[in-house]
Amino acid sequence: MDYTKIGIKIAGIRAAAGLTREAFAQSIWSNVNSLFDWEHGNSLPSVYFLQRICEVYHVTPNYLFGMEEPDELNHGRNCEEESNEHFIQDAK
Image (tube, rainbow, N blue to C red):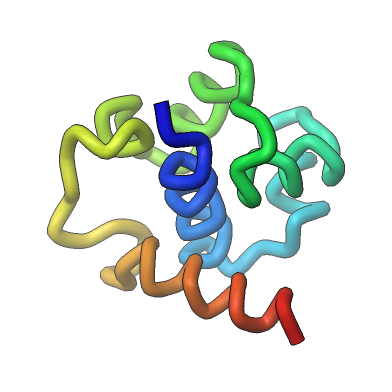
């Protein structure tokens, strides 16, 4: 299982929602350190947090695991493009 791909999806969902890591983590009842690790492929969220992400941000587990690609997600922006923008900004 590629942790990085799932992390990119999570980062893209957060970016599409226009949220900071802190706000996103709070919305799913997690913490910033865990979210950072997930987004950078250092670890995976537990099933509980995967479920919270899916419920709160209206995505499917299949989307998170790369088994489906919705045409539009959260206001029509492509989550992976959003995520890549944030990784570039993080690197600066």
